[in-house]
Image (cartoon, rainbow, N blue to C red; front, side, top):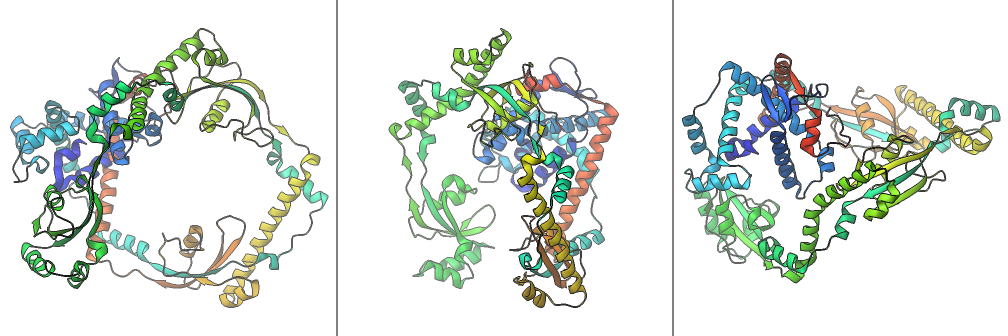
Length: 636
């Protein structure tokens, strides 16, 4: 977030990429350093400490950023799955390591220099291109920064960049590497292939008793009854908590009045935008288009395709350039604007459709407001109920007694296997969180009071293992039909593989694909020119990879996607990559440079961690995340 604020519109992408590199390399070496440290200190590298509050703030910033990009609020479980906990810690450790090194080198930046950098930042300029205090403060408010916090972080950021920019300057891949990568990626091949009708080529004989017995003995693990467990489950879900909440009409009305603007349906317009290299070209086009009877046809004569200039149905907030937004939303339907000097180019604008906005009434959004209020309160209520359950557990109450007292869902599951099913293959628990309950059931032990399991919606499940029925070998007589089916299938796959090998040998001996396809009942197909990363219709990706390991005219067989048959394929032609264009060379150079930078930064921070020493307080991390007392996976 700070990087985007700091660098603004001109070079924000480069700096964000650099930040992502630091995030990436900082991961290495974290997993094995978890041990206690000072109270209130979550991690320390050298003499630089990362506090619980600092981590919590960085974690919330990351959560807010990701939630904004996804368009919805993340739960703690979703954040964990996305690696936000780990990424936040890794980033802070990487930053602390570099700051420690900078401090030891005596690097600093003056107040005057910081002030100049902020005044010169394009992100804080008004429409006239001058620094604006109002724009600066609005940007800080929007991103949750105080002025003092921003200046402090900006100072640290600039000092760190003195080091990282110096470290990375001059890094560039050799031209030979760029050329090799281009040739590898852009070489194309045409592949011929067909799938024989193997039922015409092979006949699997009826297996005898000896064969069945042999298969059974060699695959006994496939013929066992699974381990079954009897468990008691107490569920505390977000939906259940929300359904129990009572929200008054006055509360709904107050929330609506407070944030009435959020419930507006904004006006949207279908905007057509034609971009020109300069004002003169735009003026000339305006003269031709303003009097045209058919705008689309007239624009086409100027070289514009409708798919290129139709931006779609947009709200004002969807337009990045405020000047363009202001002009577009001031036009009448089918009106063509005069040339507009936007931030990136001079454009002509036209509105072909207008969908009016609407202020939704309280009655229209009442349920939405009620649900939002319930959602906001649910997290607190979940934690309150979680503590109540834990207190009751500490007092020796059973899950059933706790469920009855607190009005929570309680289930007794007579049997459940690792796939969440009963012995006869039916679901043991009909619930959205069944898979997590199953995991908890097989992570616990009889008589051991396990910690609560986090649910996907932010709720919890308590699972007590009552008894365990170990897996048991099923006798041959009981599974004879299953053994027979498996034996026949295994023999069929072996015969298919042998038949495919013979067909490939015949191709190597001079037979043609057309003749073999006709002979075996297959349909000969051919791909267009494909690269290594292409997955053409009818040809699995593994087959494409095998084809790129063959010379021209080479043939092989590959498993079908379902693994039950084999495709015969041949490399019909190979076309080497054309010489790279200047744009391709620049893109490959940029990509390889970023990889070089990532490797160098990874080694740099790893060396700093070794030099200064790193400790991470696992208990403080759980405290920061609000998971103290619950299982927390290692950050690896």
